Length: 305
Image (cartoon, rainbow, N blue to C red; front, top):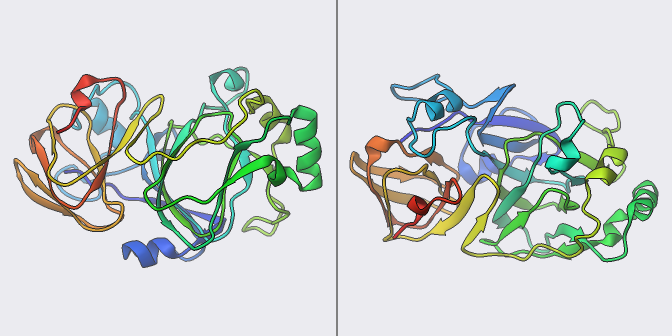
């Protein structure tokens, strides 16, 4: 199995919980994101150990070293998030909103809630009645959160957040995020705070208004077993099930240790670990615990059990 070096991001809403929860050694500062698997132009995950050490996620993917379609860029970006403070109210564009915008890439994402502090909430989706003029007024007046649904999730909940959805993660979460391979975010409102450089963080109100799907009022509903995005499937897989060889198989230990029995031997994933199976691992049985399985969508070979 392949393990990759995480890429840590310092942000004003980050903290140190990934150190406490996962037992990792973090760089100094407020760590809000740990990019576990990324294949973007300026961000490329590298293998942490073993015979492929130093090789990038993308080159191994396209060489067929992870099974699956092995076509183009690695199909999704995977990251852990730790929100010590609340994130900005934001939206990501879809394909249409990216047209004629240099560097913009569509971004639909899904969340798995691994940890939540008591009383922690998410802002997900908008109430009926908001339009571009109302959103602009609310953002400039600091009241945009009053137009958003407030959700108190449970550990184990999954939320699918299509591009064009207004959202904000509150303080007190550890979340696994899987998304289209993109780093395009439009901030609508940032609670009046400054960045790590002491300067106000950029707001992208004009771009955001063009990206929001105002006609799609409502809040995403929590799922407990599976979410399907445009370039990924994330599902919970319980102990005793067997994963066939062939498709892309990314395994994440989301709550505690997970025991895996592969054709090359037994493997243990500790809480927070992310591993990508190689074709030579053959069939993989979830010997103990439960894991998140991430793979490509719309492929009958991803069926398990």
